[in-house]
Length: 129
Image 1 (cartoon, rainbow, N blue to C red):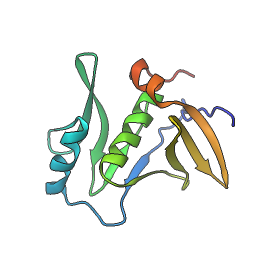
Image 2: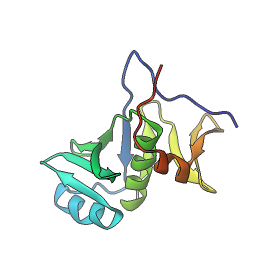
Image 3: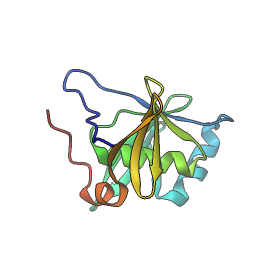
Image 4: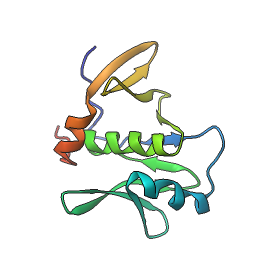
């Protein structure tokens, strides 16, 4: 497996939390709180790290994230798991956690992003070009 850079300095990239049965907004706050996420305002999901909160996703009839770091990808993966959903990229790739490692599954192959615990501990430091 090779490490994959997900970030492009030219454009953002959206990841979507996809469920078989859609989640109503009213159910969202109840579902995310036990996993440590909070709803800020009417459409933003945040996660805490070292005394601060950081935006992870926004509600637009579904949850959408535009990760700026591997930490954001890991948080989106946690959020997906809390909601019984999958994390899917714009090109149909699926993000998964296997044996403590975050992987991107695309075209029949798996590419490693990194170890989940290490990424969470490192925090939301932005990707650099």
